[in-house]
Image 1 (cartoon, rainbow, N blue to C red):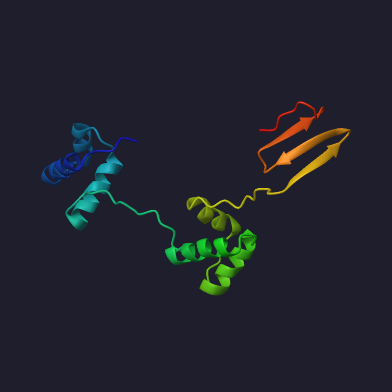
Image 2: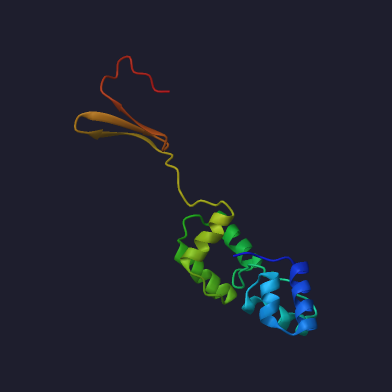
Length: 149
């Protein structure tokens, strides 16, 4: 969709006001009939043909709610998303889905993944696997001469 400049729109509207022929004005300025009619209507109403700019902001999720969730996650990291939603409803009276809570956490780069801090060997079919802090799984067949980095 082609967007016309503000000067272009004002010139087309002024030409139309002077000559009172919408179809002819559209042919001269090579614009659509509906567009020119809309520009004339907004020009008569507000003496301007500026485009509206809208802010995309969420009315439900306030910075206060985001701060509360961030602090609560740091304090109690094992709480589930639907429990966070329940807390928000109780404390702020706002119904949020678990997806909304996830989006807040994702926005602030907070992950809920846990790292294994245990170091233990695990046997499977005669082969010993050693799991080290979620980094790698190393099958060890011969313990002599094997290096673990």
